[in-house]
Amino acid sequence: MKSAALTIVEPEDEPGTDAPGPAPVPSSRPQAPEAARERTPFESLMRAILLPAITFAIVLLGWTVMQATLVPSFPDVPAVWNKAVEIFSDPFYVYGPNDMGIAWQVMYSLGRVLAGFLLAVAVGIPAGFLIGANKTFEQAWLPLIAILRPVSPLAWLPIGLLIFRAVDPSAIFVIFITSIWPMILNTAAGVKAIPQDYLNVARVLNFNRREMVTKIYVPATLPYMLTGMQLSLSTAWMVIVAAEMLTGGIGIGFYIWDEWNNLSVPSIIVAIVIIGCVGILLEAGMNQVRRRYDYSAKKE
Amino acid sequence: MTKQPSILQISKLGKTFDTRSGSFEALRDVDLAIGDGEFVSIIGHSGCGKSTLLNLVAGLETPTLGGVFLEGQLVDGPGPERAVVFQNHSLLPWLTVYGNVRLAVDKVFGGTRSSAERDAWTREMLELVNMSAAAEKRPAEISGGMKQRVGIARALAMEPKVLLLDEPFGALDALTRAQLQDSVMDIHARLGNTVVMITHDVDEAVLLSDRIVMMGNGPAATIGEIHDVSLPRPRRRLELGENADYLAARSAVMRFLTRNRTDKAA
Image (cartoon, rainbow over all chains, first blue to last red; front, side, top):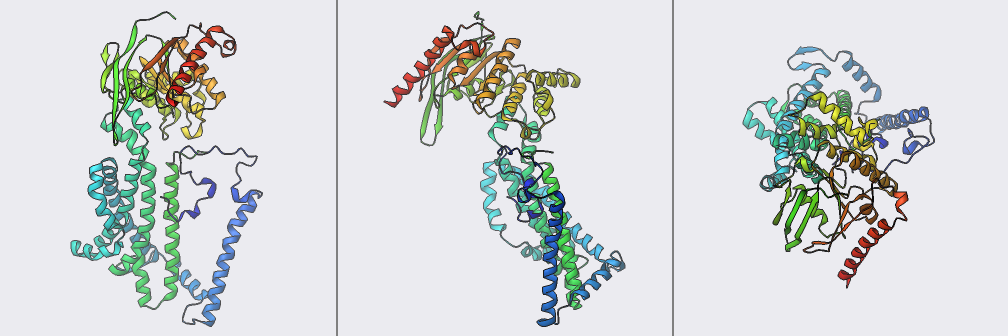
């Protein structure tokens, strides 16, 4: 259920998979995470900064050596650095409808992701509720979902172009398809996982159908929905780059393709780093939301 | 205990479940009348249908034969006048301790009491089970015994005519269990509720009950014996250890349970 990219979550904050987890062992250092038992916070911080810095240094060194010896056509580190400075010195320029700063490229891409994602939320969560709560719906729809889910969302791009006869809605359509499956399946799993106890409580209180949905079903399923959203969003951010390479226009994906046509490899490398950073931000944002609604975790 | 007119009547109650491997008759011909303010324990081996019996009284299951009558009215579904304290507390984890009790209060008294009155009532119930200090905590942040206290507060907050306890202390350690048993005795003495409790703990049954209903083994289980516990209240667990009535009740229940066990094992 959990995304593979959860490495930015500190291990001690990782919520347990079961609600009644084992009681935490009382410790004289309640703040100390497992891996850093004997370290002061300062040492932990230094490690958190130093170790990745060493990795980055090794990569940069390897890059420089490889570039100097094996692939001289690849840009060297200073070239990419200079390009990055150039790109970030004016990220908001607009020279015309097809020539805008890097910030605009990212925002157009994010806009498409957001539009497709929200559409998928609007459709996928009610659909997930129906499938999770109703055996008939489940039997009727699961086989279709099983067939469509493994298909690369990009395969839907021509269908989108055919239906919408425009590139922007087609890209949004691809993101919608990307996002909808985790949303449906996680919501359905959440509804199925609602303990009978909660439903018995609701029955003793004579909840009507509306109260059942708003006071039991939705809050009980929320953590599952958020997991689905997190999976959807990180996949959508990967897919938009590929989709935009095919559709063109303003967007970080087509920016990369465009720079390839200009043979400006330094720009591509800068764009890759930007895409990665935006991905981390999206993931961290969703993690925040998800943790906010993780009922099994103890609040500080 | 002086006998009160019966508030709850269980009459010719039978329950048969349809399972994949055919039908299974869990209960047959269960007859019981419970007086107003009485504390009745139902004890038996696991699988004897005592939980089924409680679910039928709660209305969570529908009887195959016979019926349950509360103040002469046929029970045809669950309702807050037969509030249940579930074995595993069943608190909603997204609500605070206060929120869990308030949810029940709002549902039951939403039409009859003002918001301020419902707030006061919720806090009064939390005070009753000594959980006021943890009112703003989530269930994940409190211990098992505390959760069960909140479960009791939630059930009592509905002002039930009959309070149903489904092995309420089964999942707790011995010390916590003793504490909660004392709390339940105290609350019962103060409020005088009618209580039906499912248990498999003989001492618990003797300590708390006015009557102990012993269930025979299934399938088609029914009531085997009923033992009146005539110990005066308030009861203190430490003084009961050598009390003749206490020991008599205890051994009567033990005898019944042992006999039933050997019957089936043979």
